[in-house]
Length: 188
Image 1 (cartoon, one colour):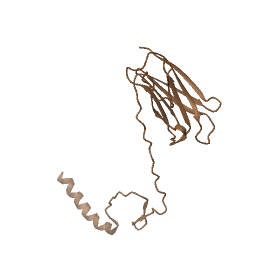
Image 2 (spheres, rainbow, N blue to C red):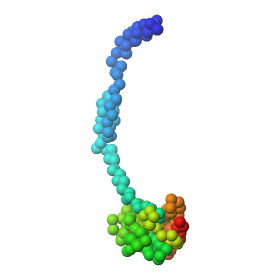
Image 3 (cartoon, rainbow, N blue to C red):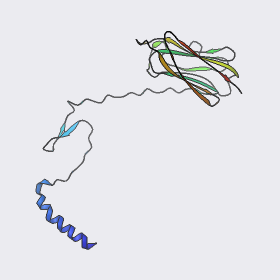
Image 4 (cartoon, rainbow, N blue to C red):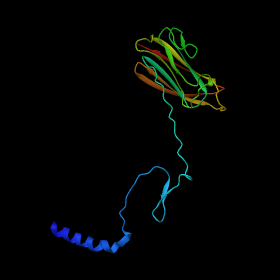
C-alpha cells in the first residue's frame, strides 16, 4: 500500500503549485432567502425583487364525537348545509335540537347561519356507545343557505359509521334539489 501512496503524494505535491490561485476550496453555507452568486464569487441578496413566501394556514379540524352511530357530512364550499338525523322514536337531532333523549348529539355545525364560514366544513351527529336505540333512522341533508355568490350544485360526502361498519355516500344539493335523504337501521 505504501507503494501506491508515495507516488500519489508526490504527484499532488507537484501539481498543486501549477494550479496557483485558481484552486480555491469550496465551502457551503445554507441560507434562507433569495440569493445569487455573481461572476466574482460574491453573494448578492435579491430579496427586494424576489416574491415573498405566503404563509399557509391549515384549518384545525374539530374533534368529532363517535359511538354506536356517527354521521359525518363534509363539503367544500362556504355555503351552509344542514344535517338532521331522525331516530327510531321520531326524535330529530339537528341545529335547532342538538341533543335528544335517545342520546343523539350534534357536536359540530360548520358555516351555521353563514357566520365564521370555512371552505372545508364538517357537520357531525353521533350516539355514544351503547346508547343508540335499535330501529330505523333517516339522515337528511339540506341546503340551508347560500353564503356566497355561487349558484351551482354543492357536492358533499356523507360518512355513516354504524357499530364499527362504515359506508360512504356522495351526492349534491342545489337550489332545485335542496334535500337528500339516506335511511339506515341499527340492528343489535
